[in-house]
Image (cartoon, rainbow, N blue to C red; front, side):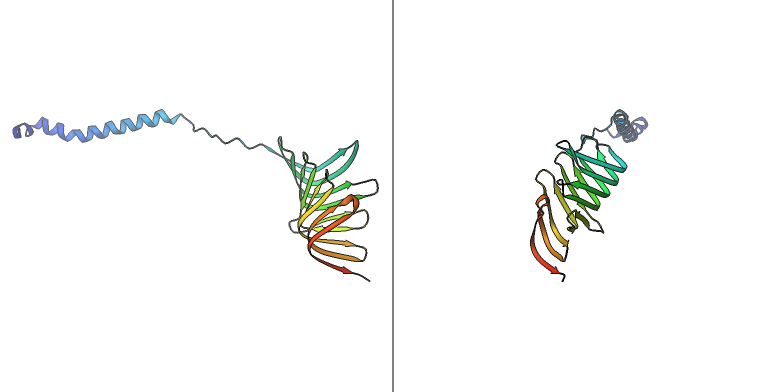
Length: 192
């Protein structure tokens, strides 16, 4: 057996075995790479709906054959098929009854067209809601729900009227009846 291993051809063949194994391994890897190269992984996440940005946006809402909401904004973002519109730098004029109007100014807001709701908030400047009766409501955020005729907020609120300033936290209001309920930490200042 020792004489067999001393032959030159056997020694060359044995020394070529690792090289031959390496060539076969790299060939297999290259073939696998080429066969997988054309496949694209499938993304199962749905594509985001395209958003439309509208400059100098205007919106009006008609209810019972009468237009009751008039909203203007510097810009609006509307997503395709969505019922919500995000607004920036807006003013809204809402007709609550024949004798009562509400004017709102805010840095940002959302109109939910399906739920007939209006949510406004301020980043650096608070939201102001002025009633035609002279009452002014100031808060960081207000939620107006048209169907139930309510305005609510969880944060700090200031009510300003002739001769009185009322501060509190949390508000539930029925604007048409001019009913305002502050939830807690109520403090009133009367001017003489």
